[in-house]
Image 1 (cartoon, helix red, strand yellow):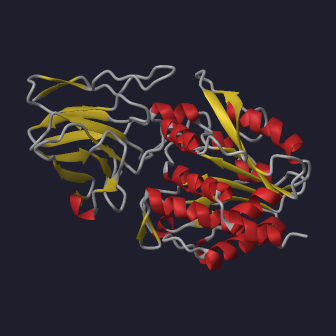
Image 2 (tube, helix red, strand yellow):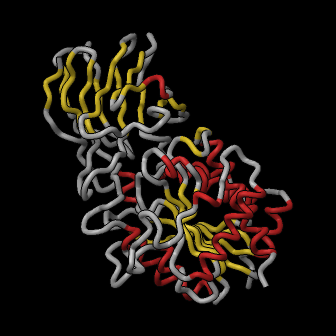
Image 3 (tube, helix red, strand yellow):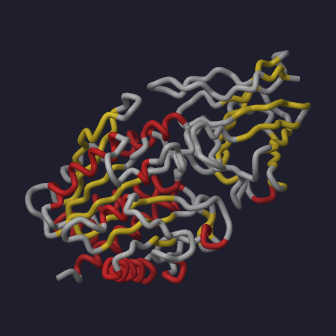
Length: 400
């Protein structure tokens, strides 16, 4: 048995600092914690082979579903994990890593029953990590940028200092030498928990920098501005990010911004764009499962001309995509439909729709686990990003 302290992971200003949620009474008991960047769990108790825990909501208004923890000293055991505050498992079960988070796979729907999942630890298991989806941290971004450090078409710049003192970076890539024909803005992780969007962003960047016909055209005609981790504090601290009180990063574009990352973007873009900003895309993940949330879809803004241009980009993506994750424009959600009814221009895409020269201002939703019946993985999400880059090229070629 474990003596339960009922505490979640404490947070430091620069690192996700752990104090264990439970203290083992003997060395033979498993150790469960979230003491690493992105970690999130509250351990309630362990009864034999049954573990009871829940996601840490912290400053989230209402329910959300992100969690990420590790288990040690459980070799040879079969444990069942019970989530006590809602079903926070996706359609493919948890993502699991046995190499410290270097690689991940889906455990599979067969591992689940309601809000529980069961895992048999190998006899030689050391640390095993479990997460709602495949995590993406600042270290993953750094490793990706290191692989492209020699590119003359990629520039990394300081963007802002977060509220907790972290250095948030932005990227410029493509045509950096003058006045390109077009500019494109891409943002990601306004909601810290939406990890799969980051893997798609990597694919988009890869295609822009690739020695392909599409990559060469994009580097000749387009300058991209990207902020890969808009809520860097939330990403590293393992926050939900969505519905953060008093409002989250993606509700910070009206009035005076309270988040430095948003304030810096609002100050920079009007001058940087020079009236040549044609496309703005904010990458997100939707609800955890079910219906449209298991499709790749665009979210519209109010101006009908901008929505019509967004539909055109959507059609190009649907027609030209070659990766495993399909897109069908039938799943897009126009402004005023379903949950897309926010009246005030508080979001990134609603703000971008007001910028001079803009044609497409939208959010692209990338499911956590399954899209069009196919699994969302690191590789398939990257392939979707490459498809999106090629669709942007074909759209812009038709621009007057």
